[in-house]
Length: 155
Image (cartoon, rainbow, N blue to C red):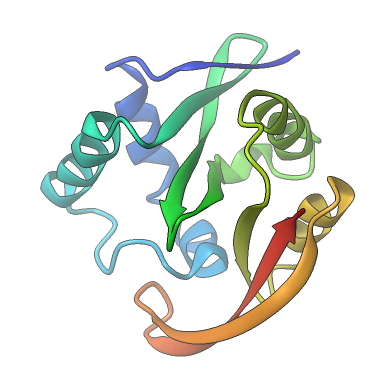
């Protein structure tokens, strides 16, 4: 059973562990340049949790912390972002979590971004009605290269 709940302090350790995976960092691309720097990670999460304009939830699978999902504002439009423990990819967890989150965060339009080669994330977003509305290029610290990023929107 997939559920969302507000982030608890103890969740941060699990989030840190999830983002240490090199394959996950490659797929996300825009993660930290040095994912093992716990100080930078903790500062980043403190900023997220202290920002009242960001809605953030812990994703649980059968009570186990398996990821996070959040909505922040970018140029006045909410955008969602998520991170799932790589060992749980392909189990429908992200798809279920995105659906639940979209029921909670109802402001539309809402956007999401995905590196163009992250077919799984793009497929999940499209399943919930997101459509590509643009693309951009940016330097991806986790890849050490410029990548193409798709901008998707749920009207």
